[in-house]
Image (tube, rainbow, N blue to C red; front, top):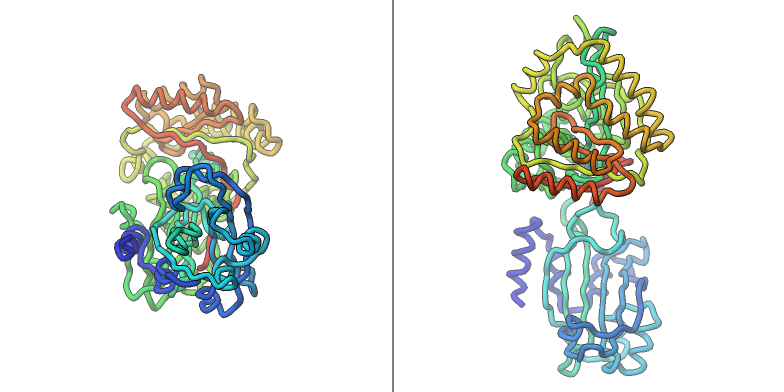
Length: 508
């Protein structure tokens, strides 16, 4: 293999590797001894799988044996014996016929690193590196990483007597064995079910109801740097992250800068809160790097979020099903007019009135037509200005619906009650206004998902993303949505679940 080329490809994909990472990916010596030198502690082995299997096509090619030959399949964790930290996840395959009995006994019944078994039996062998690459985390939660964090992997063979004795694949997280401290943040997205009061007659305005989602998500990494660098494939997203980082670094008097890599994000102005989650993740990462621990309110202030709806900030903070209480409204109060979040800068997030776990067995389908993005910027501000205040009788009906049907549906895990309430609020208050600005393709998709069996379906924020909620039959609902989207020119679907824990922050 061209190891230098593989390492360059890895760096092009995930970013700069530390010297230790490069050594672990390229060494032709004992990995166990190398890990003991790095940690200063003994390395122990925990065997997860040990079984005799028949060689498949891939194993036969790697080992130079016939398909169906007996091979020992072994999966282990290499641990720091002092701390218990998992350092390496390793899979190996060994042809049984090529093993001396004593070697085979040690390999199959003892938690001993392969390198030490080879040393114990005085076997002359060399390591032949085959690949070094980036892989998804399929280790089953062995490493304490955020979902979709990349893993580094290498494959090699131990050659003895001119034949492959063992084929091994080793994996470890990209954010392990670093030369700089790194902060990793993964945030949920959210669906915004409705604004509650765009009348303001009782002296408060806004108020929101929403659900934090496991996917799609924002995943970014940050480390201290001499200058501000943002690595992201989307120019608009990179610009948002850069602007937020500049503001936060100034606000906390960081005395330095950051390098930020955005690994996962979702498009803006689709109704899922992309801008809020990117800004909050950036702000949190910058604060963590420079030892600052602001409250959620202060974090939102620095990120410039929460000026109308508090669903995005509450989703970041603790996830789940959320109801917020809006802002004080009128002369000399927090808000004096009807404005979206983009025009409500400097206003702090509203209080969270209720946060409850969303039922884990309820699935959520997101369906986004390939249409122009939802209302934003000046167009969104104009809609707020011309369509508010919303008639008070609709606000009363909406609040009654949420209080006496939607909330009991969540607390009692009554899907039919909750879904009926979701359907009802689409024709009430500001949500009715938001839907009135949508093309027929969007409203038709809403009807299609309901007809396919959704307990409830609605539009998130200003769309164009729609959502459907069900506990069974989601495959049929998704298929109906996909067929409809194909007819109107395309779009995307995603089946996800609620996120009941908020953002995950990890220090590496």
